[in-house]
Length: 166
Image 1: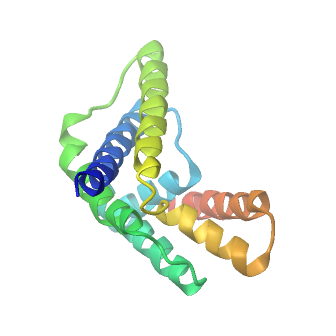
Image 2: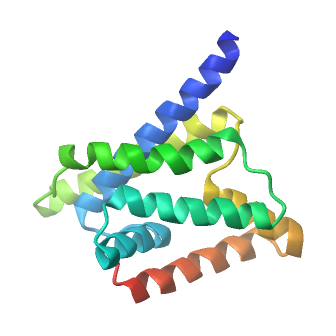
């Protein structure tokens, strides 16, 4: 029982750290990944909170992964539900960063923290992120290389993010 609790705690803390890191990266104003651009574009285009946009994209990835035959884990669902909650709850505590050096530091610190959060989340072995679940589902259905599938997903995200004005 203690081992199961520890694994769930790793997921909860990992998603929390990754969500907080995402906000630091956004507020550094030096750029984000393609799917984060999509989330920002959805939030701006539809006038919703950033965390709500995270729910939207996470839910789409989750359902799409199910459609490929992938069976996302408990942590995958937790990332969809809690990622948005954490981002909305923490949004007021992270502010825009000013000055070139401070922005670079915020970007680097956010990137390191997101890496740590992701590693913590994944170390629980309770499921991949919604996007990674979709990626592995497409890989298994098409037998394209993981590199090709991931690149295609990221390029699609980049185009969609640009179209949404993110």
